[in-house]
Length: 147
Image (cartoon, rainbow, N blue to C red; front, top):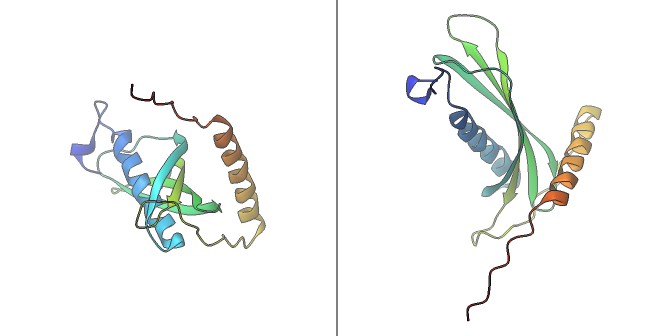
């Protein structure tokens, strides 16, 4: 990470990290969907440890669940001081991406193959998060008809 991305505390601005998380989620979802995706929501972003100027940052992304057109992508961010020291987890985030066609409309994606108990557990946890998001999703603000 470079100085131009630093905040007033001298650490990397959280928004810079979130922008990269969004890009990584996009690539991960697009690979699974076989085409363009858009960000639908960020769910539960945890900043665990600061990222310092000069750190090398690694992003690990996994699709945890798939709906008809949506995919939940879990992104873990790790940082490492170039001068030495262990890698440390700095951010965890869940991002919901939606596959879209050329007209920007949602389109179906392939199902997710769950290969082991850990993947099945993550998929069940993702289903609960999706249910919670649906329960609290804004229904939109009605637009008044013109007179």
